Length: 382
Image (cartoon, rainbow, N blue to C red; front, side, top):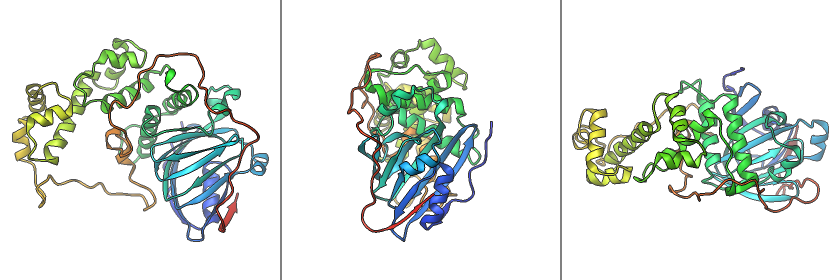
C-alpha cells in the first residue's frame, strides 16, 4: 500500500498553475475564472486511490471531448461539497449541488462543473475497473446529485477526511478496501434510491453503524436490533464488528451520549441535569448520572462546577490549530458526523426494504453535455 504523505504544495494563485495542479490530481481539465482566482489543494495516495481536499473561488471546470480523446483515463470521481454550491453536468443533463451534497462523475466522458461561490470539496478518484460497476449502469449514476443528509455520503466523507488527516492527528485511517466499499454504497444509493440498501462488508458496516448511532443517539428508544435490521445483519454480527474495534455497540452508544451530555452541561450552565440527560438520549436521569460518574468519577453537577469559565460564563472552548491555508478548513471537524454543520436532524431518513428494482430518474439523453463559462474571464486548460 502506498501511503504517500499529503502534498506540501497547497495554495496557488493564477489559472495556469491551478489547472496544472488539478490536472495532475484528477484528469486534464479546462478551467476558466476571473483574474483574481485563488485555489488550494492537498492530496494523498492510498494504494490505487487518490484522496484530496480542494477549495477555490468561483470558476468553471470542464472535461471537454477533446481532453477525453487525448487522455481517456477511465476513473470515477466521487465528490462531496463541504461548503459552497454549484452545478454539475454530464450525460446531457445538469443538476445543482450544495454543501453536504455529493455526486459521481466519469472521467472518460465529458463533464462540466460550474462553481458559483467560494467552495470546498472532498474528492476520491477511483480507477473504473476497481468499482465493480457494470459500464452500462454508469450513465444512470454519473452526474446525479445526492442531497445533503444522505447517509452514504456522510459516512464516506468522514472516512475520507480521516484518511487525509492520518499522518497529522489520527492513529488510523480508512484503507482502499473500506473506501471502495463505501463508494459502492454511494453508487448503489444513486442508482436505486431509498428502495434498496447494499450489503456492507465488516469495516464498512462498522463505519456506517457508528455513523448511525452517533446520528440517532438522542432517541432514547434507539434499539440495537433495529440498527442491525437496518443494515440487514444479525445483532450478533453487528456486535462482533464493534468488538473488533474495541467495544460493543451498546458501549459505543453510551459513550456518544455521555460526550454529548458533557458538551450540553457546559454549553448552558443553567440547564438542569435532567434536561441534559433527556437531550443526550438517556432514558432517565439516574442512568445518566451513573454512567457519567463511572467515567468522570463525579456526578454531572460536580463535574460542571469544576470546569473553567470564560468571561461570558460558558466553558472555555479549545481551538485546534490549523495547518491549512485559508481556502481549506481544518478537516478534524469533519471526522465526526455530529460536528458537521450540514447534517439534518436525526430521523430524517425513511425506512425502506431492499429491492432489485432500479431507480427511475430522468433518462440521460444525447451526447455528453459540457457547460460554457459565464461571461468574460481567463481560461486555461491542461
